[in-house]
Amino acid sequence: MLLSVLSFSLLSDNLLLLVSVLVFAALLVSKIGYRFGVPTLLLFVAVGMLAGPDGMGIHFENYEIAEFIGHFAMTVILLTGGLETDMKESRPVMGKGALLSTLGVLLTAFLTGGFIYHFTARMLGGLWASMAGCLTVAVVMSSTDSASVFSVLRSRRMHLKYNLGPMLEIESGSNDSIAYIMTIFMVNLLKFVQEGKDSTAFALTGVLLLLLQIVVGLVIGVGMGYAAKWLLCHIRLEGSPLYAVMILSIGIFTNGAASFLHGNGLLALYVTAIIIGNQAKIPHKKEILKFMDGITWLVQLLMFLMLGLLVRPSQFPSIIVPALMIGVFMIFVARPLSVFLSLLPYRRLPVRAKAMVSWVGIKGAGPILFAMCPLVAGLPGSVEIFNIVFVVTLLSQLLQGMSLPAVARLLKVDDVELGKAQTYGIEVPEEIGMLTDHVVTEEDLELGRTLRELSLPHGIRVIMVRRGDEFLSPHGSMRLKVGDHLVILLCEKTDE
Image (cartoon, rainbow, N blue to C red; front, side):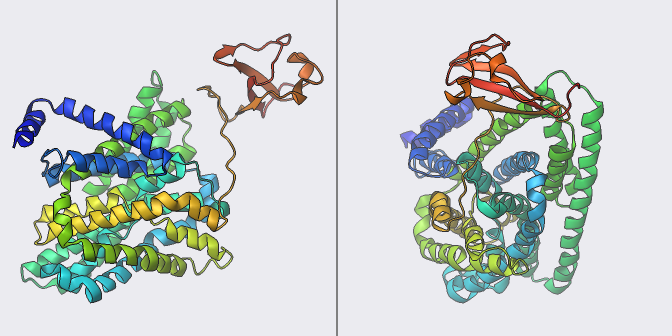
């Protein structure tokens, strides 16, 4: 009782204090969990659950607000993911990624829906025991989660052979939009069934609406991408933060405009972000990406904390058996089958590479957010479905998220990732050249100790030297030491 009164007081009078405490606690827990290979986002959920109704007693049950916050978070996550997608690496695997995000999602949904209908429908009962209801549950969980995939691959600096990393990022960045379209369609279909209306006409119309959403989303995404490219080339702002805010506002506008025109906003947003990141000449691009990474981590953290607050573990015993059955089926049967069938045209891709793609079917915030759609629509049994999706997501995070590096080594698809140049915020236009760094070794100093005596090849310029915590301005007579970091400009254009 005391905890409930205290939590109510905190929510009503000290919301910012509560949020800051939860965020700080989540960051501390994630630091500890990182040492043991526990996915960071899973730990954020755990902190939310500990603070929720079955823990500290903090009640948060406004699904409409949660859905809005989650949708905004997905907007930021996909925007950042699109900006960081390198089309030079992604173009060769674009076809594979597109097949996985469309055909793969459909196959996963139908395979899982059939399993639910034949093996767990009686446990679910009510409206969800119908084939339409079972397909709705499956569709909600059919996509891989972009936040989780981006987080695991990038935070652990996993570099996979056969260009699997870009393929998986394309899939996870685009399949959320497909799953969301299908979820809305199935929820509306179930409402027609519940109200006793003829669902056949709606189903036929819905298929056309699905195609319309995809086409409009692509068109708006491409149009806004090139409009943003022109805008960024012709408008000059003071400082990199303003450019970051402009790109963020463009992404939010693209999402909203596509949705207003009956297109898929998430798909449009992702396409726009890819065009901006690869074709627009953005001033201070590295600083902008760092800013967007920070915002992305913040919204991910808040979103997963919020999802943890929404769930009640005390309700799990009634759904734990069907949830575990569904989760195991999706991880070990539905996902591998959908991947191998989708990638049949690519016979040169080794089996072990396809097996790795099958294992990176991580569930996360996306499926949980989509599971709110039946709740907001007021469909009976939607609380149980939300809990099932939550349990399946936890299972996926624990089994797949924690074991990715080990599975990559087992399948021999892991590769040594080249270290990124430490350029310390320095940025130069791409047409001038590229920055890299070099650590001075004893062999480098055999011919002499000064920069002039290094006899660097034509077109290479040392623009800064870092020695310990000091940053030094280079000159020809500077004496170098082993361990010095040279920031080097590889010039493409030099004066003859």
